[in-house]
Image (cartoon, rainbow, N blue to C red):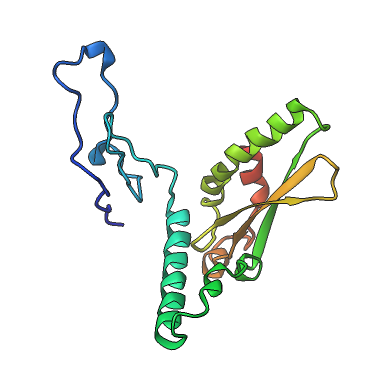
Amino acid sequence: MRRPEPIMLNNIQSNPPELPHSEYRDVWNQANNPNHYMPIITPAYPAMNSSYNVSLHTLEVMKQEFKRGYEITQVIIREKGGEGWHRLFEPSDFFIKYSHYLQCHIVGNGENPESRSWIGFVESRLRRIIPFLETLPLKMPIQLYPVMSKTQKSNFSVCYFVGFNLDMEAIAALPDKNIRINDCVYRFQ
């Protein structure tokens, strides 16, 4: 994949010469960050990529949504005379879009600050499961659905879903024709 040009409001300023060396900061550099798929650089010193968390999968989901939004907008402008903007805000098709889903339960132990803190901690790390799933024969994209759902596990549990489609050709090439998601989930824990 060709590296994208960064989006910047101004040129990246390196460490100013008048700044003491002890106060130098890491300044974003495209050559040192080849896995930044959608670099949006902050305008102030030190320059940083504000979208460093974007992976190939999240970039693909965003591109699909930008395309969908553009197509809906074009229809509204061309055919509806500016009516129908609500179509941009229709519920997601996430739960019909993928053939398989991983349900991620986060279980707290009560209605207390520690339990809420634990759930928040796990939520903040949940996006990190995607790289583990990338090792499996799955098609692009692997999508984390960022909406918390209540569960029946306990009164203090929530869950999130990850949707994906299998790459049947890659699975057919495997010696035992099976994939094991357990290893990915174990390594994530």
